Image (cartoon, helix red, strand yellow):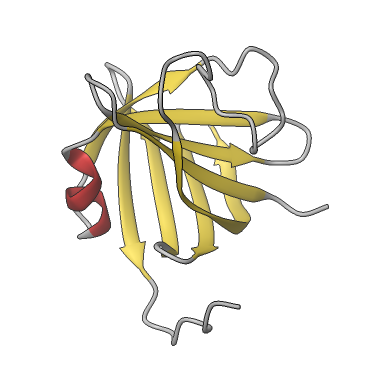
Length: 125
């Protein structure tokens, strides 16, 4: 099974998104505040924090699932180009995101930057 990703939106205050990368053998989750999602989609670098998944390897089960309403914002396949501290590069292909996610370990948390692919996005099924 290849790597997959999912983005869960938690609209209840304080609203945030969890970006979940399932590499098959482990799951990494990065949380950004709600207002940073548009900036991330536009290619602006945003701050994120790493979230402990509590051993969950199921992208269908939201992290912090007891915390109110959760909706699936995006999901799809991904390819790991680099996964070694402090730089992580992941190519993601979903309905909302189709490009490269750059994750950098910073002094306080993480820094995320999304670069939209210039290739034609395949049509959704």
